[in-house]
Image 1 (cartoon, each protein chain N blue to C red):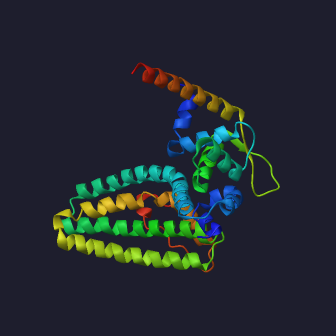
Image 2: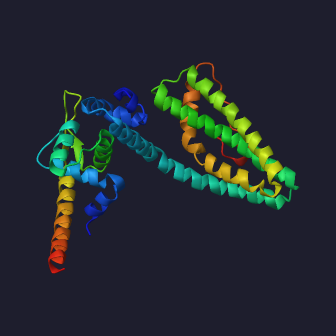
Image 3: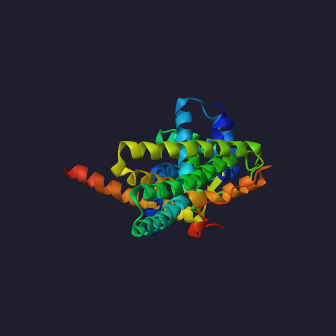
Length: 196
Length: 108
């Protein structure tokens, strides 16, 4: 793999700071599998450094909000199928937002170097659509295979997946707002009082 | 146990490479490739570029090393005053540990 390609594995902020000197070192190093593995592992660690604090913060916050919503729904005593669909539908919107944010972040960081282009719009749309499809499949599969577990499965998935929601949202909005011809969809969770 | 020593341990997987980088910089500023060569000479292990820069990133973030201006792409780094202190603490702890281990081996 070329040194410039290896460098692209790192977060953009890191590349801005260390990119030139790291590239010089890579070009001086003996190429080989060992160097490749070393750089891939180190790049993954830089990503966890970038994402972990935000991720942990928002997993905690969002878990709390989600549990409150679930508690309110349970107290309302909705019939079982309605209860389940209420939960899964909210998860679908949140999942779409999460995927959009993650994709926008990835595209912004790794491909566009901070210069949004129509590519990001397309990628966001495609993955948003795939996520919607996956959510529908999961909902129907859970309901038909194990009706008594339907509530537990999407809750677990949604809590984990949506933890990153707000951490990535500012970048997502920045990328989407600057992409030509793109009008961002308003957030679907205004009812929770979380929109900005 | 000193605060500096604790902080060096906090670097986790990078604590050993970080220590080697600091030892390498103890006799003067070096850039990445020079550090790699020097570390291989003194420890027998060659740090990969990712590991080396993982260590440099964390040491710089803690203010224990700092970059020097350079016209070249190969940017040299030097130990800061606090980095010097951290290294001294760590070496003193290692020396004391080695002494205890040597005594125990002799007594066994």
